[in-house]
Length: 127
Image (cartoon, rainbow, N blue to C red; front, side, top):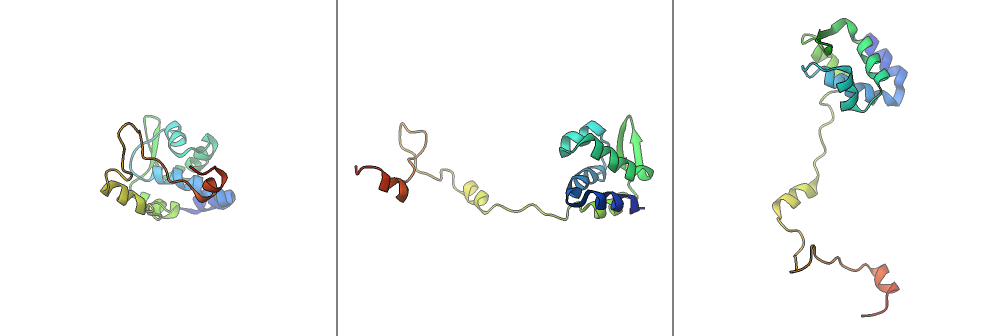
């Protein structure tokens, strides 16, 4: 069942991530057109069509849109690595949300002045 997808991924080598992005969209349960898959993944139409050919036997079609059928979607999602890479949490994001104004503001200024770097201080004349 997954042999054609594995063969396609092997032929793409390190660029197989593009195939994974297309595959994950096909396994999420929504019908999508080829144009939507190209737009959402940023891959070429040729790559999208190659993925569709590899999974053609297990595709559901509706009004020119496709998806991988529900009984086979979990196996394909595992092959494409969907949900494997959790989003990396940005530690500064939490701090920025907790603090309303990270820099004190002065009246008349759009933002607080930046501290002068040591390199810049050495190059400028003293105040």
